[in-house]
Image 1 (tube, each protein chain N blue to C red):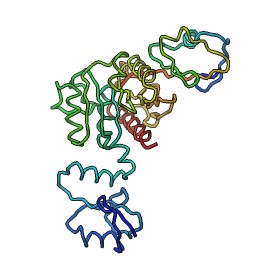
Image 2 (cartoon, helix red, strand yellow):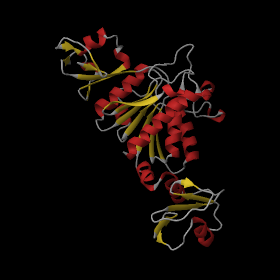
Image 3 (cartoon, one colour):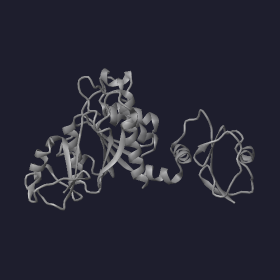
Length: 263
Length: 64
């Protein structure tokens, strides 16, 4: 039978994963079989993909790509690596979507925000105490490169308008709308859908407060527009933005991006 | 016509902007797709809506 071990396909007569480990990879600590980390032995089958990894090593570009392929499957990882995704706004939604997409290994992220990190952002946005005062684009770049040093990040420290949005995000197959104000959200979605007919927009609407998590959902509303959120709970006095629901909504957005990329 | 999946009675030949206004939409917070095409905001006055049309209106709430 043929199996793929750490990225290379090979013919083998070995019967089980542990036998393979003991034969050639005995100093490796982690075993991932077809995208799932296992601790017990398993019979090898034709077409299996096995990744043996070592703990406590800093992977180079090739190694990290291989272990992400082992986790995500090569098909998904190819789609992620070759994708360019835009993120408009690096607040609660955008900073968290950016972190998830870098964990997925999306090869090129175009991020845009005009603001700097302030202490009140820390209740929900993907920043740290040492981010305070930095441009959100710079702080996000640092954080994303700490997650995955090998992705390309293009930064735009600029206020996005109806006039510059299409130019900033022209390379993107998908743009995530992650603004705060409803009129800015509408502006960006209109600008991209009007001027970039092949680009899909994933937008957030309704994630404030502490309402039921399960009200947040993903809906395809237009040919090229997905909305994530509960569509109801807007941020206002008495209805603040908090980490759990903002993260749930960001998770919906990131998964919508992944699903579109692998479709 | 069909708006957001629901059949709504309209007078054929009505301007899109009048339909949005009479249904209480704030035009600064919405996006409109008419028969699969995004309608630029500057065209809301000039676009005419008819009986067989199908329209999706997305209305944003704040927070992000």
